[in-house]
Amino acid sequence: MKKHHLFCLLSLLYGLFNPTLLLANDPSPETARLLASQCAQCHGTTGNSLGDIDSIAGENFDDFLAELLEMKADNDNKIMHKQIQAYTDQQLWFIADFYSRLPKISTELDILPDSEVKDSEEHEDTELSEAEKKILEAEKKALEEAREAKKDEEEDD
Image (cartoon, rainbow, N blue to C red; front, side, top):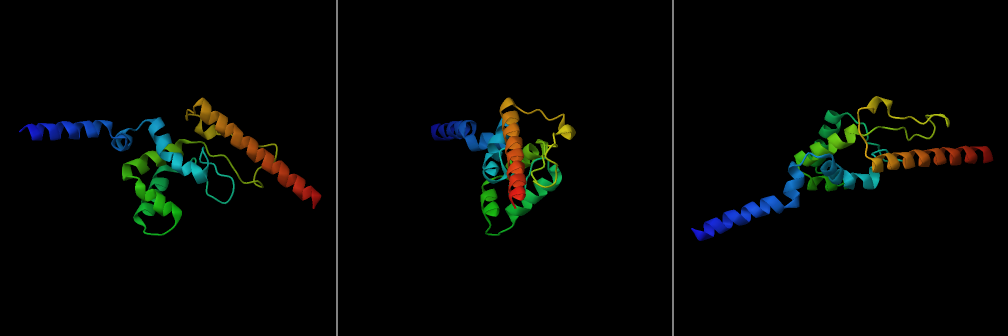
């Protein structure tokens, strides 16, 4: 009987203090940001990547979640397919929700004129933390600098 009580107590403590279980059930923005941090390695901290990797900020939630779940089910040997295996379906839901709420900015160097950098008017209801605002501003600045460098390069040619 005492072993049973000890087992129950240990199971309860494990459930309460296991960070994986806590992350799986906590829908807070901080948890979603933490879960999505692995994605930032390639897609940028705000989901707006510079370069050949797809930006994922502002994606339609349902489409993005379906794509993530499809990648998880696929047995492809690509890096995304391997990394996504570590997430539960619920964690992927949090990640899709997190990135779908972030404002999408254009990262194409030749789409917008130099004087026009898209702001996120269509996402006015999205609350960004001060840190996220600073990151977004830094990414906009990097985009503007890349545009200037491309413009200078074209003038030199």
